[in-house]
Image 1 (cartoon, one colour):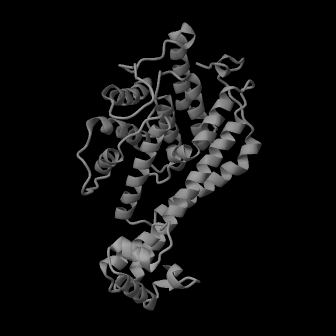
Image 2 (tube, helix red, strand yellow; image 1 turned 180 degrees about the horizontal axis):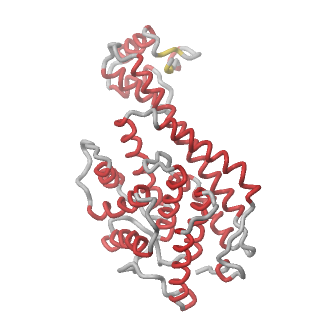
Image 3 (cartoon, rainbow, N blue to C red; image 1 turned 45 degrees about the vertical axis):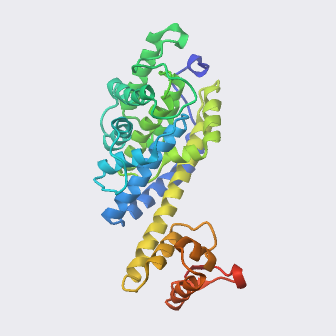
Length: 354
């Protein structure tokens, strides 16, 4: 296990340049506020659906970063139960997956509670239970039966124990540090200490979630930081390596990367939320319009971001109808000012929402 930064003189007192971070941190805080404001415009049912997708995505992608693949339907079933949502077709709750979901729910819902060794070990046991029963895929054979502190570090388990106690004390101490920065610092410090044989990344990101939730005081969070890290996993791993190999304890570069990643997560969430709000307004505007099932289906697909061009042949294939029926459906929507014909003609003619 690499221990270079832990052996540096001055550890664990990391440093960073507030002037370099100030502007980007301000942008992130501004986006958090805008996202919270927009989410307040959502109806309860729509918000629960967004949270279902957000929580599920975050849990799955955080596990994926550790080389583990959770069953999406099983995770969604458990999350739906916590949100009091009844989704037809989902499997019954898996008690082991439920333990994994409980870690995220605990971090997001109980973000104001102190962080303790017992709490971290409870999270570790949840992940260990999954390993033991091999309900997920991984690239190595697990050898952890219980959540025990790693004894390999410099052959000195006392050192690891002291590092964890010191980190917990730091996390629970009120600092004049913005909680967003504290989220990034906590994530990094836990990776540095690396107290377990595996799952350190999962636990580090759960600790990060606590401070991100404290930052905007929004336990029902609709942006996915772990999912964004998964999308940028190569740069994420590179940034962690660079920070670990740093010899002067300055983590400004890491925090810059962390803030850029968080900003991307917030932008993606805001763009998604904007589409949802526009879709809701659209259906409110056209609620009295008579549409058949094919038309409703295709309009919703357009709102969700159709990757292919909407042509009459595409319409016919998706709806299992004749080309003539597809053209009649499309022309009816053009007449109702819902669709418009894009430039081009013949078989390549395509249509978009007006």
